[in-house]
Each structure stands twice: as C-alpha cells, then as structure tokens.
Length: 327
Image 1 (spheres, rainbow, N blue to C red):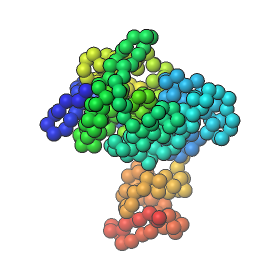
Image 2 (spheres, rainbow, N blue to C red):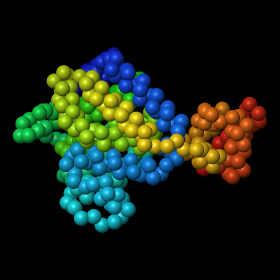
Image 3 (cartoon, helix red, strand yellow):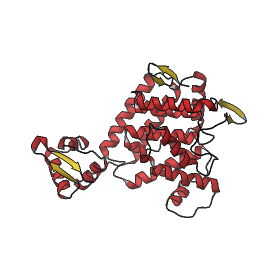
Image 4 (cartoon, helix red, strand yellow):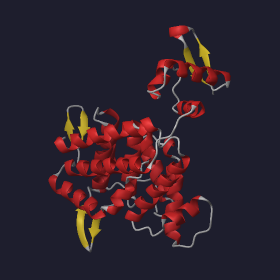
C-alpha cells in the first residue's frame, strides 16, 4: 500500500524511538564487524553463512533439506530428497552466487532473480502474477493481495521509492520486504524474494550483509514474522515490521561478532582486501581510511608493495599521488 509524499511515492510508515534505537545499534555493530575484517577475510565463514541463509529462507517455505544436505549439493554430491526441494536449493545457490550481478533498484533485475529462483517450480518464473491471490493459514484467508492488474504499477512505485527516496538503506530494506509480502507480486516465491531483495538492498549499504544469515533468526521466530506481517496489514503501515526486522538484523550481527574472531591483517591480506573494494583511483588517505589503525609509514610500505607487485599503478608525487587498480 503506497501513498504519495511530494514527488516520491513512499510506502506508509513512521520512524519511532524503537526503530532509531535499532538503527544506532546496528550501525555500531557494522563498524565492529568491518573493523575486525571478520567476513571478508574468512572464506569458510562466508560459505557457512551462505548455506545457513539458503537453508533458513527455504525452510520457512517448507523445504525439508538440512544444512548438511545443502552443503553436499553445493559440493556437487548426490543427495536423496524430494525432487522439488533439491531443485529449490539448486536454484537458490545459483541466485545467491549471482547477487552481485543484480541491481537492487531495478525491476528488471528483480524479475530476473525470480526467474532464476523459481525456474522449474512455477509456470511463469520471472513474470508478475495475472490473477488474484489470497494467503492461507490453517484453512483461513489471512491476506488478500491487491488485484493482479495493480501489481506492475505498485512494484514500479516501490522501486521508484528505492531509487529516489533518501531514506536509510536499513529502513528501505525492511519496507521493501514488507511491501513485497503485501503486494504479493508473483504466483509463488514472494517470501523468499522479499528476503533475498532485503539482502541486496542491505548490500548496497554495506557489502558484509551478503554474508549475514538473518534468515536463520526469521526461521526461529516464524510465528512472530507472520503475526507482524498481519499486524501491519491491519494497521495499514509497516512500522511494526520495520521494528521486527531491525531487531533480527541487530541480533544476527551480534551473533556474528560473538562466534567470530577478529582477523589479524598482514600486508598481503590488507592489499587483497583493499583491491576487492574496487576503489580506483585512490590516495594513501583512502587506504588508511579502510585500515584506520594503520600508520602512515605502514600504509606507504603497503602501497609500494602493491605497485611493485602490479596490483595497481602510481602517478603524481607527494600530496598529489594517485593509485589506480590494475585491470
């Protein structure tokens, strides 16, 4: 349900003290994770968390495969299980491997992701629904989605909000997740698309969210998840869902910090990490901004090593020195 505020079609919600408290807490934890280089420097941690994300998001939709079975599929091993469950996992692996290829504010990318996620599972993957739909819970209709004829316009408005509104990405991600559930743009796969796209929006703010398995906590509080969606439907705004999802993100980051050890960054790891950020051109000041505890002398030694090894080139002199990543 989207209403107009000036030139931006903004979904209805109001920021309150609880929401602002969670934003502050999450921002603080993001700083701690980035400062520790926990996610970027640990491939095994990233792989494990991605498996948790896929398993939990599909479990919410009734998939029966375990983390161990999903790991086996990821490693190209044979798994015995329901054919549809295996196909759901295979599709999800492809989509999450391709996250960086999607644009968070593009309807076209949204449809492409749905096509990959639901290929072989629905008749028209990658296309908005063309019929009315109601969400059933225990043989009762809990939500009647907007008419199919309105879906395209509602989704265009929602993506216009994503692209042009200056709201925080943390808030936008929660709003988009809720509105996707409310609009129900597809015949099937709406829940997993809402969670997937929230990850993508969060990644536009902080890349580390690609490897934060918040879906695990949604799966553990599934009743609260659906109750909050229903509460927002009745209220006509998404405040309660924003609070719920921010509490989930806050806890997911806290869990990440509690089970992970900070990584000691030597010169090789620093250079590798910095190059992965694709900052080009850049200065020594930009380099130190990433590694805040690094001295100017150490930064200069790193940059010289990077130039000598061909990771980037150097131009200019003294304060006008610029570095450019090698292609």
